Amino acid sequence: MRKTSYLFGLLATLALGACAPLPERVTGPKPVPAEGIAARPSPQVSLPSNAQVWRIAPAESSLRILVYRGGTMARLGHNHVISSADMQGQLWRGPTLESSGFEITVPVNTLIVDDNVARTEEGDDFPLNVSEDAKAGTKANMLRPTLLDGERFPEISIRATRITGSATSPEVVASMRIKDQTREIRLPVTLSEAHGALAIQGSLEIRQSDFGITPLSLAMGALTVQDTVKIKFRLVAKSATAASP
Image 1 (cartoon, rainbow, N blue to C red):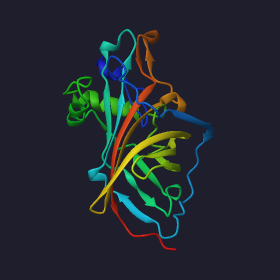
Image 2: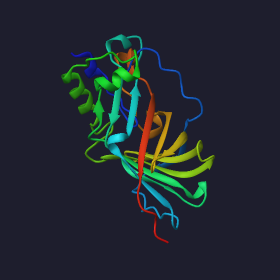
Image 3: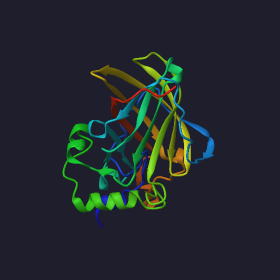
Image 4: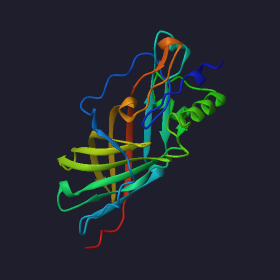
């Protein structure tokens, strides 16, 4: 059996097996359970009067989920880089930081598995040239009903619920919805603005089990997908029109 085909345990965003030791954890952002809400579609956001609005530019934005293997037989598996190149959404700036916010959706069925460019940029934990068969097997398993269930839940959504701190380094509390589970996450980001565009970047770690997902475990735990996955993102948003009063 192909070794990669063993590794399907999924995020955040989401996915599968991984490499030797877990990377150094991001300081600060940890998942904060939101008392286990069964997620329902969120109501339409009502923007503040005269808010400045920016739209996510998918071609200039990126999201990566780093998924790591574990167990005594970890050498038989791969770490994976799961990417999105077609995020959608908007950001808005109200009269105060607290009245600003964002909403982002990540299509699940178009997630990219183990692109060579992404693996190169993520370093030595992600050797190049994962076979096309292995990539296809990984994605098929990632989208199956017991994991991301791409047919019933085609999007992951993230929406700001509270923003504090400073304009360049805001502290964000956001609601993340994966499948039918919604959880609260803390999300420190950095923000810059130039030529009518905003650039927002940051990283965090989440646990799959916080979203009701049980990471894959085989051979009595000798080969596993680690529960914790790391999410890295850079969003570029272009100025749109101001919200009407």
